[in-house]
Image 1 (cartoon, one colour):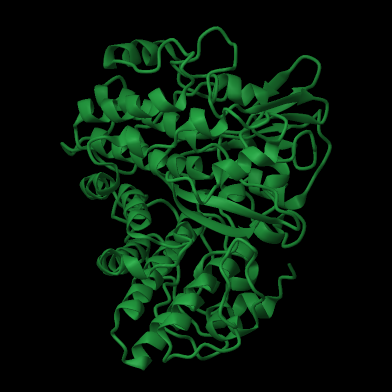
Image 2 (cartoon, helix red, strand yellow):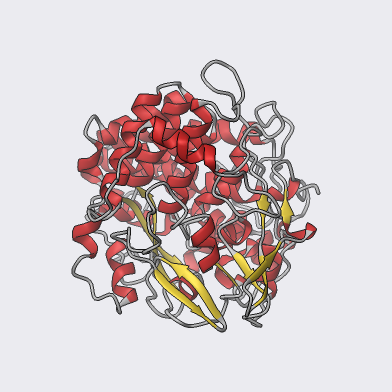
Length: 544
């Protein structure tokens, strides 16, 4: 992908530039001719929404910034400037190589593109004067897409909500574009993060009733589009980040009800009959459109599958989810791990521990050739863990534990002797763990700097019921969402300090953390630098 400065600067004009876009990949239905959409034809307008979903993933850049990746200095000499800069929380200057699809410039372009497309759909509907059911269904989807794209941009380029203790009133937001753009270089201010969240909520709340009422007018391949359930899952995540846990629970309940296990991915039956040597088959099964647990799937381009679905291929493995990471912090550092057999999961991870290739991964994004892949953005499993977090923050500890036990009972193999736990067992487990620091690897993090208060107005206090259950929530979501980028958002929301461990002696397996490998929970670098080409006029760069 050639990144032209004129395209980046004029990204808000992509509603008109969209007319030159090539067709989407084979996973999508036939598309309308992008050179002409009849504003008086509701069906063609609805087909135009095919172009309204982001074509890049935030997962790679988010995983690099998080504590899910360690650096193999001695074992893997492969370097790429984008990977180096993202891992080290630097201003990312590269636009080619691994940044082609996954760097800040690509994300800025490929998320404002669907915003422009959504605005074009909304304008066409308004101009047509047709308030028929198909157009209203399209309006609902366009509003949901516009909210989602702005939300993802804010997650990358902004600090977490309430970082300033004032609901984001003093932190930069992102330009929120709500209209068709007719000039090449419109100059929108970033506004505040408070304003950004208010506008996301406004669009989302306008979208949901339309999606509910006109669900029958959605496309046949529903998981490629916002449905009511996908919008509920989006709302649940959004309201967690917005520090409104009561609303997060409300929307999660609409999907999960009182019997959440029946809505979860049936991990055992899905992966039991897949040849373990066929990595891509596992990724295809995980991202399947036929999987009821997948609420929203998108087709896009990303270099991330070259790391997570490539077998022994060592390119880009200098920064990876290494064996030591899995042992000390993620897959095998949990209350359910006993005996070190590494066989607890129905979704069995692939383990490589060789020269050049030290990584442990679960393939989620299939390699479809030429950078093409699919990504699952919203699932019922994540939704259940989000509901559990909301319940802890609301003081309903029993409900939270029920939800977490419902998830582990399905996620873990039946051969795991104990798959559900009591509060007393969790307390005993976490009381024995040290908190992570620059000399200690541990899944237990200091989270008292979280940018929210609990139901009684208090901050998180170490050793309390709330803290222990939130530690467990964070760990369950970290395991579930490995390679998906959600860990980075938890780090930001909870004010967690990141320690980037580096393997410095291949033979001895020695690791260390240097001062430049520490990102504290109040570090402004949590807001990734905007691409240089986007910083113009009223669009200001993130402070450092």
